[in-house]
Image (tube, rainbow, N blue to C red):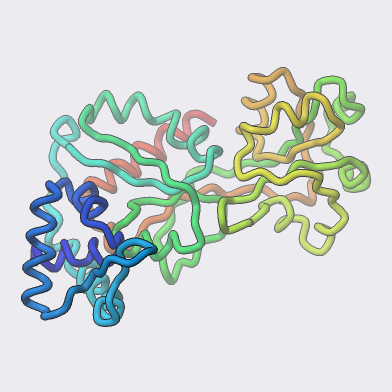
Length: 295
């Protein structure tokens, strides 16, 4: 079973080094396991090419059944959660900078105080992150995207409204009421897209009227925007928790977004393979508890 667990990660990462890092093993140990797997299966499994290590045809055929095996046995193989002070684990979380700001940051001090050996790896969103969740490459996703409950479990963290961020002397900053759509569409915008998913949450919420929004620049993270906003007429629409902190840090103004831009239900997502993992449950509880109190 140890060899199969190693095989599952090798097929995902296509890397001895990456597999060793994820499993907390030495590279020689993983290399020996790969050699044993090659002998047992009578197949090289991974071959070196000009594009790096690639799976053989047989290895490609094994990816899905091996991952199914790993998911179905994870509850049996995972040991009970140790006391947090003894927990030595790296949690891999897919989230945006908004997720870091509103979910990870409020909980980090309490997590490290309770479990000083725990580390956190933040990874960007990707089109295949649900598959990566299923394979164990990542442990959790923090997202405002609508989840597919046939594929993942989810837990609501909080609901946030949207606000527009602009330079302090912008004409729109003179009022505190929600913007009307006509005024919203009259100014250039900075669009925030989610990694290689290229999803703009504001565009999604505007629906049929999204084409009326004139997006001058698109960014994958909002913290790069101050230089674009401070010296221009552009506005940026963010969840209010982020907009308020962002504006305060950079001397910008905020105003409530049009009411037609619906609220954001921010959620924590995990796969069935982690549903009974007590370590993941403890970690998720810490995130949920502290991000709620930070609102």
